[in-house]
Image 1 (cartoon, rainbow, N blue to C red):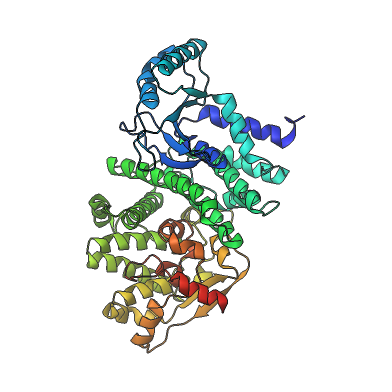
Image 2 (image 1 turned 60 degrees about the vertical axis):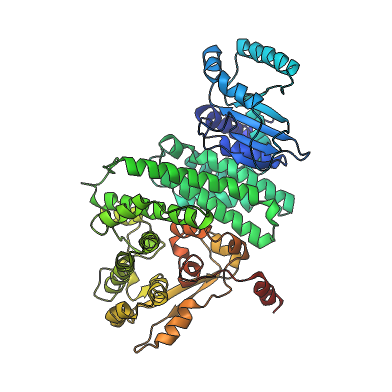
Amino acid sequence: MKEKGESGLIKRVIENWLTNTNEIGYQIPFCQYLISENHKIISISSHSSIEQGKDIISIDKDGKVHAFQLKGGNIKTAEWRNIQGEIMDLIRIPINHPSVDISAEHKPFLVTNGLISEPVIKNIADINLKNKQQGYPELNIIIYPELVQKFLGIHGSFLPVEPSEFRVFLELFLSEGDGFLNKDLYANFIESILFAKSNSKPSIKRKISSSILLTQYVLQPYENKKNHIPIIEGWTILCSYMFNLIEKFSLTEKDWIQSYEIILKKINSQLEELKKEFISRENYLEGLPFGDGKEIYKARLTIVLGWLSAYELFGNKTESNYEIDNLIYEFIKRLYPKKIWYWGESATPFFIMMSLVASEFNDKELSNRIITDVISEITFGNDYKGKGIPSPYISSNEIIASMHGISEVEIDSMAFHGSSYHLGALVDILVRRKRRDLLEVMWEEITLICKYTFQPDLKADLFLWRCYNGKTSMKDYKMPQSWNELTIEATKIDLLMPEVVNDKLQFMYYFLLCYPHRLNANTFKYIDSSLKNPAVKKSERKKDRKK
């Protein structure tokens, strides 16, 4: 009976996914399984040669140390010979980690998403007997059937069981994986999991665990094609929805921090792979469906350089000794502006990230040029004689499809005349940089554009992909305009951001690229290094709540 209906289908989906992925593909779900079992993850492998067979290291609720070596596929005698050295390292070499006493005994595990043959099982039994005699720990094994049950157990009742939800799940899961991520569809799916049923603390923690596994399932087609951007976007959206729950229900950090860290690990590992691929290639044309691919080629370069810029900025702000890679800066210099494309306001965050990288290398000319170019695109494009610059709610692929007449929805460029969601953030950047001279040249055109800002009713709803409860404010710049007023406006920090990000500001680099419609003067202030301390002090936040 348990195998009937959608629950039986979910089990088969898990089996299919687990059979067709590799050890890297199920590493994050396995970490989330351990977290759900009250383990503290202290190390996740980047699969280098110095990790001595230990892909994951954790400490359980009783303080015992566990070390896991993850493998993909069946392990027969030939495979066992190839990995036996790693396994002996896993068993015999003590764990070298600041959180673990070097003399502490650890419990080693060999985990595979396949099966282990009988001769190998016997060999492991012989090794365990010998190791026990010599004072070493026994090797434990976890194989495919056990993994299926462990992953299915995490989901509990938080599965897409409604027919409409399950169809969405299957549509995502059965994607070809070589195109863009349908963010509307994916966000709706995540909402169906995270916003379902009860909202007790245990329930929310369980839903977060389930959503991490389900995200890995539905993004697997993109992993198979090494299509990095949709994977990065998918995990960024999931993390954003997790922040929504954290803020809305005031979860303590211990309830979610490990899930946050493994999600970031996944995002950053994909960005690192994207960086390696980008640097090693000269041609970025892939499967272009339209003509000579001019727009897609430029859009792809813009998106990749924007994400890699954000990755470098993230590393620089989170690691004390991290230096921004000069190669990324050199690519920006070489490719901007001829190979870069501003297709609409959903491109603005990518341009801002490139500008910030140039600024880190003290290339003020290039950094400011990028910002002024975008302001010019908006002001000239959205005056009443311009071509119309689409709003940040419209993606590059939607614009390209419309340009080639294959879009289901026609984009009315006239609808964007006279307004902009991003102009305020861009003007503020130049004000904070004290570039009055640059703004004066463009000011007349700037005053013709009304700046729009959307503010959700609930601060937590900033992290929703689509928020239907909020208000849009509209404001014009003055002619003439007081520079002092502009400076005050550009440097004032409003208490409009969810508290959860005050300690996780660097995530905003990724969030604003993935959610261009959430970029505005206030949200960008939190990651602009020209503002020395954008995070509001906790004491001030407490005072505000009391008011």
